[in-house]
Image 1 (cartoon, rainbow, N blue to C red):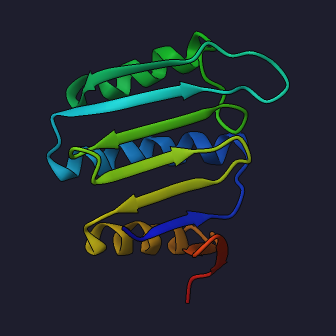
Image 2 (tube, rainbow, N blue to C red; image 1 turned 90 degrees about the horizontal axis):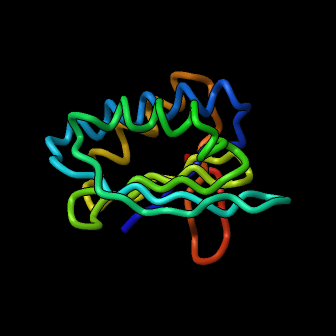
Image 3 (cartoon, one colour; image 1 turned 180 degrees about the horizontal axis):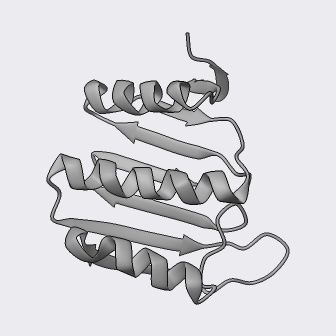
Length: 132
């Protein structure tokens, strides 16, 4: 499954990327998303995993962020859907990672990132190389 990531983003950019991610998930027609979070850098975050209906994902994420259960760019946040065939991960370094078995979805997200002026990288073995 191909994996891409964008360059590190600031907190506001990560929040906008989360909204874009939720729209992407809605567009795929998924019913349920597995949300996993935890691993605060320099402290202890509450870790959790929960199944969230897509129709309530926006409000769930808004409440989770507002309550301080997840800090984008400081905590790991993974959104996994389509029986593990699609994964979007916000990592502690401020990157947004995406992998899917549907190359059209990967290319669509890459095009979105590039249109926003973001640099895009792809996994090549254990390394990240610029995606051309």
